[in-house]
Amino acid sequence: MKLGINVENSYYTHGEYDWVLIFTASDMSHAKKFSDMLVNKYPNMVSKVNLMQILITLRSQHILNPEYMKIREYL
Image 1: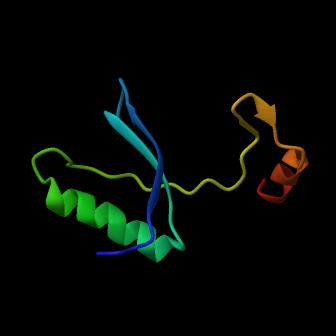
Image 2 (image 1 turned 90 degrees about the vertical axis):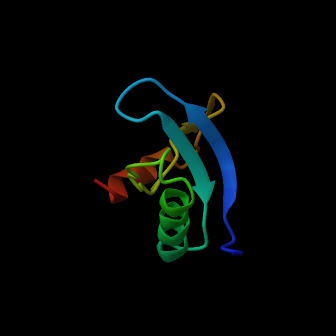
């Protein structure tokens, strides 16, 4: 199904979650459909999904966001 999902980063981690997947979606409903699809397609590998939305990026690839003070709008 074409959901307009673009996977940007995928990390295998140690901790509460084994896998972190960073992706873009046109809206939260498409993101939810994608996460549900992962659970349904890989039921023996994916048991829990925690969907989070990035509100503002403060630093990426060692580059400070010039509009980082907009974080106050989210606090």
